[in-house]
Image: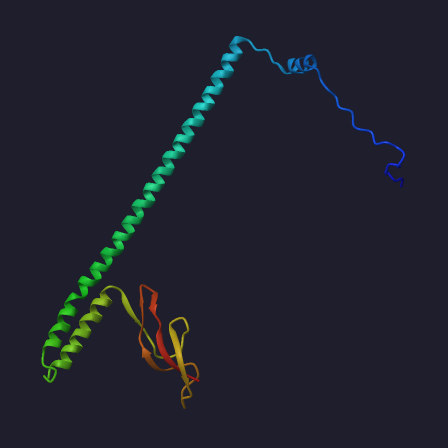
Length: 189
């Protein structure tokens, strides 16, 4: 393969520049010129105007849609916040009778015979209110289920199969199949 290096005694030639004269440029531009009749020109202008109107209408429609969506998002955020606050108010209002009962129990004489029974009645009332709102207790007897239970201890128990719940430290609850607190349990080894 021959080398393309310049020999030291040969001069490097500069590329030739081609200059065009104004007359040549005019001739090139003249070849790009299209002649039209007045009627054809009017038709093209009309078509361009129609396309511009369609573009303007589409842009306006997109701007209206964007504004409508922004308004919807703001309105929806407000409705969501209001609904959440209303739900909290309803829940608190439903528990006020239980709070009243605790106040009455606290005011009564602790040594009275009915004090423990009063606390049990208040507990039952609170449990009934929460059950009505959809609260369900997670069963914590039988086999350990990591989806429902949180094992905090293990213990070897004679006569009990491994993986069964020995003791429940804290009850677990769910609302409409969504767990809000797992049961805290001790499991047999």
